[in-house]
Image (tube, rainbow, N blue to C red; front, side, top):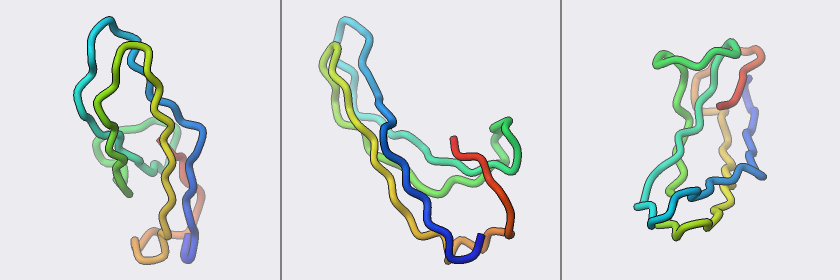
Length: 78
């Protein structure tokens, strides 16, 4: 995976509740298999602002992974 970039778009965080949702974060992880666990690799986070009921936040994430020291191969993103 040397020199690889990760780009995520189209991910939506929605407040489906009836009250405001406070500020939160979404973690972007890489896994060597399709089952995500605590041992997977956190490559970044995205800050989610306070959301009013029904509000949608579009997540965009881009990162150069060349300095992450990852083994070559395929990874799942979650």
